[in-house]
Length: 211
Image 1 (tube, helix red, strand yellow):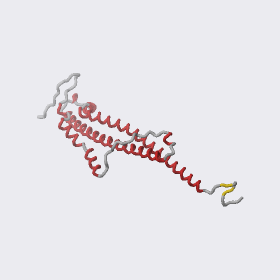
Image 2 (tube, one colour):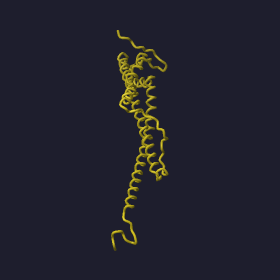
Image 3 (tube, one colour):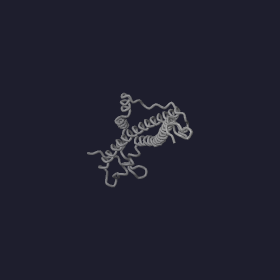
Image 4 (cartoon, rainbow, N blue to C red):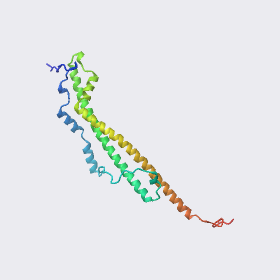
């Protein structure tokens, strides 16, 4: 004889779902371990020589008009180097955030699939008027404690990604501006050397030509 699910009425007129339908602590740990691949990926990348992101030793540069007008090429080189360092650093951080977010979303999906399977099985032995709707099942998943913890962490990571997206875009624009100004300075210097090597004008005539 099939086990009859607990149909004890609860406050508000609903039915109390069997506790076994949720995810046990042991199963939560198993799901976390199952999808916890990020550290292994990082270890592999480290073994290939790709080291983890290190915080830049210089402040994140904010490009100003005064900085772009400097005639000192060394200052331009320093400016470009600092901007590039921060751009690469920000991109590495963003990659780490996206990688962890993927891991969390897969764990959430795993928990949701397991709960749906159990709740559908529970529905099979319920009377027609007591069957859970699709919305009821979704609500049970969304209010599962572990699922909710993962969702909060996922929100935190998505918010970090949005902020890092803005930083990366800002740094990328700065790199383009600085690179363009470096090229303009090179062109000006090359033009200056060309002008110096051109024959000079003396007494209203160019050297080598008579009027």
